[in-house]
Length: 268
Image: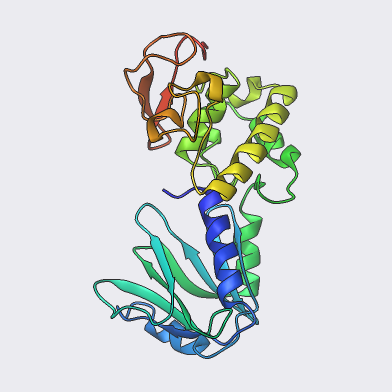
C-alpha cells in the first residue's frame, strides 16, 4: 500500500499541473461518472494530502481518493491515451504551458465526491502526519495509554497518519524497539526520537520517490545510490542476516500485514 510520502508527491505534482485551471473530469469506467459530471469543467483550487488521503478542492466540493492496496495514478503531458480497462477517473487540463496534462486513476479503495465539511471529519479521525506541521504529542497521548503493541499502533492511522508497513518495520528497527512492546511502555523520549527520524526519512522519500532507511555504512554497496535490496534493514528480508548483528530476520503477521524484525536488535 502506498505510504504517506507517495500521496504527498502525488498531491504536489497534481497541484502543479492542475491547480488554478479548469479541469475536464471523466470516469471512463463509469463508477465515478455522476460525481465527475458535477466537477467537470470547474477550476481546481488546491490538491493536497494528509496521511494516505488525497484531496482535490473544487470550492466546497472535494474529490477524495484513498489508493488502498491496488490504487494507482499514471500521468503525462499532451494528449492522453485512449481509455482502457477499469479507468475510474481521468483529469485533463491545459497544463503549465498550455500543451496539455492528464492523470488517470485506477483501482482506488475510495474515489468519491464529498463536502469540505466531510473532509474535515476525515482529517479529525487521523493522527499527526510526519510530513505536516503536526504535534507528535497527540500520537504519544494515545500510545502511552495503550496496551496494544507498538507495532500495531504505528499502523493505526488514527494514531499516526501516513506510516505503513515499510516505515513501521524500519523505524522500529532503527530505534531498537521491539514491535511487541505494549505502547504504554514506550517512553516519551523514545517516541520523540522515532518521530524526528520519521520526519527525516519521509521527507527524503518525498524527494527521491522511494523509501530508503539504511545508512551507507550498513549497505552491501557502500557507494552510489542504494539498490532495492540495500534500501531497508528488515523489510522483506525474512531469513536474511540482520545488517547489524547477523541474526536471521523474522516475519509475523501483525495488524493484518507482515511484520519484519530482528529478534536480537529488537529484543523484548
